Length: 64
Image (cartoon, rainbow, N blue to C red):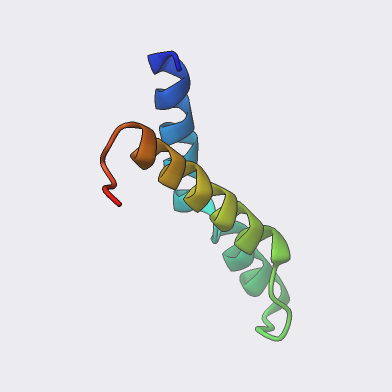
């Protein structure tokens, strides 16, 4: 796999993990209600984690 693809997967995963809870925070501040949770936030977080695990596996950062 080309190095640029590997790097993009890693950076996208890290970015998604970093911003995953931003929509949730905005929703909580806007609604002033913690009852409803944003599914989008958790979905972004999960996709980011999966991409970061793929990146770590390919670059041998994570050893099984």
